[in-house]
Image (cartoon, rainbow, N blue to C red):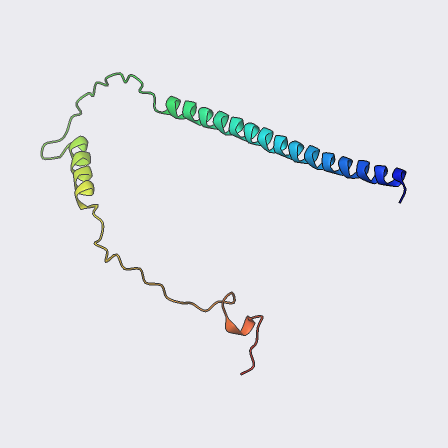
Length: 124
């Protein structure tokens, strides 16, 4: 090899080494910019939903309603009293069953786990 070929080979190696660093730095910058954009988007979405939640949870002033007494026949229970009794019964009897806290899983044979459709058929 003569001197010209050696110098071209060395220049080519330096260029490849430089291109490697350029690709590395460009990739790093792309990742950093993508993370910044995603974090900005997520913060904006979170702020939007916080505003919506704040609007939903605003307490509005309720004007008092006057209820006119209704005429009820003698021996009949008023509708308001019936509603109150019904709600009290519903709330007092709406109880959950006592559970044993034991999970039982029964195996069911379907086409997803059937041995006949398996990929491997072992000869025994």
